[in-house]
Length: 232
Image 1 (cartoon, rainbow, N blue to C red):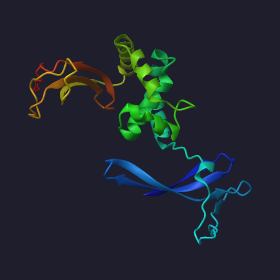
Image 2 (cartoon, one colour):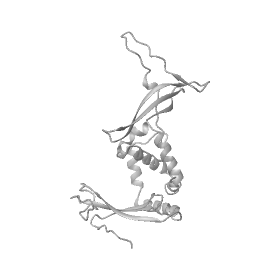
Image 3 (cartoon, rainbow, N blue to C red):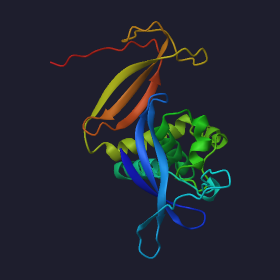
């Protein structure tokens, strides 16, 4: 599927890129190819197609140095920002984390966009629109995680639950996540619904019955048995 993206270059000119989206089988995630097809005429607002590239002495076509153009992706920012504002998540984060919410939202955008570990956020934030003018580096992420203490997490959950409790019923579920880690004390052998011969952590999750929004979660000891309840 193709679309067009407008990007403002360092020289002030607005360039138009044709973006071809596809599924990257190697990376196992959405990806895209970009090709500059022209720029916007300031007087008419129409697209002026690129001129044929001139040939140098070797008969090769010369291209415009890429350093003169800065491409910034904004798709993931638009989607995450809209979702955070419409659900009320943004207001709750600002209330509980008045100094750190831009960093938290930038991490959310990165995870939603790539699914990669947070230590890879440096290069991504340099090429995408975020809540931080200068982007985010992994060192700041490490500092952020130290600020997300258990007490602050619980304060956020209380605020988030209060925001949603009058809208719908909540549903509770307990699931397990297997792990090879030897450094997480809560990872232990227990009942495993997938019958994997690995230790695990149990996760208690509360979600909105209609909205499917996650409302609360808590890790549990892996030895705690998950049970099924049949309602008559």
